[in-house]
Amino acid sequence: MNALHQFNEHLIVGHVEKGKQLGRKIGFPTANLNLVEELMIDKGVYGVYVYHHSKKYLGIMNVGNRPTFNDGDHQTFEVHILDFHECIYDEYLTIEVMFYIRNEIKFEQLQDLINQLQADAFYARKKFRLLQ
Image (cartoon, rainbow, N blue to C red; front, side, top):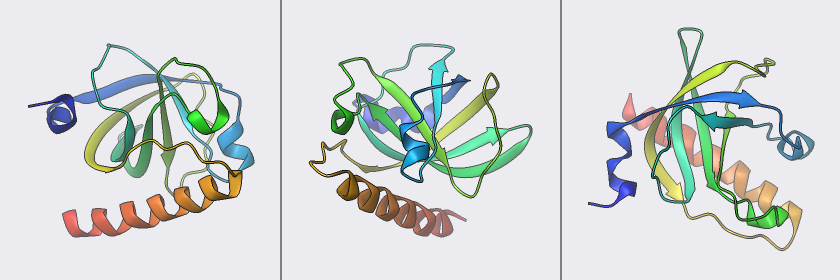
């Protein structure tokens, strides 16, 4: 069994750090996580539950190296929390990975990335409704 199929067995805990705020500029602000423990999970986009101050939110998480932004080879964990607008820098989030959405993709145009993120959020909402 590869790492992709084991994600439901793990909770991810990470400290929210300030990033380059590129997601915010395109309408998809993300919490950039510095993980408390190392985790092996395949690159890609996932539907996740996000736990913050005893509340559970829906989110989408990208694991990878942000190829559209040509941002180097370091792996990032970025979570966009759906319908959430609080400032959470320097706080901790717990992430429960629920399902895989797609591979990480390099987009030639920024608008293509925005369109895909909108589709990812729509898909995640639909899939979460089926899980309830």
